Length: 173
Image (cartoon, rainbow, N blue to C red; front, side, top):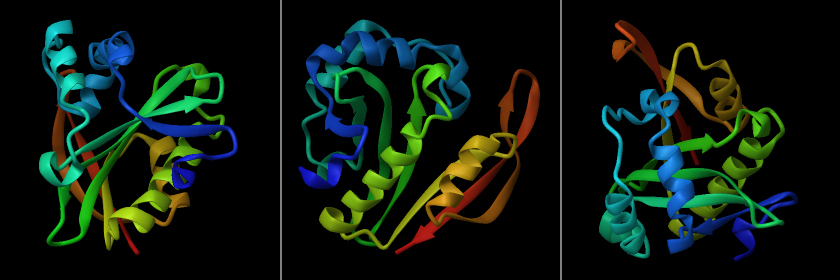
């Protein structure tokens, strides 16, 4: 699919072989803050999730894609969630696995590809995301792609005993 192929990366569907990759990401406590996770996921549960990952976005209201380089190394994941067909919108989440891959344009290219896919195949009117007030890298990334801050949710997430504010950003097509 041409809309999912970029210069340095491409977005692909989840495969059963992604079990170890997804298990490692979902169980890394540093990302629990952004996924609102409190407990680890078992390999069994992730295997079940992967077995159902082929289901249509119109049915499960979510689409998770792996961000891969052309050496077939998984670099991260990008998600559409809370897909709302009636109102033509969805939330977006992105995670680049290793800090060594961050700030190298991987997220920028992946987000651009996802937006192109949403326009070409899902006809979405708007995309939105939720970003912690202190996550400047993500705020910059999404702003670069036309997302605008439309609100601040005060004391929204409890992280390590302290409440953090979270921005709501929106991109209207």
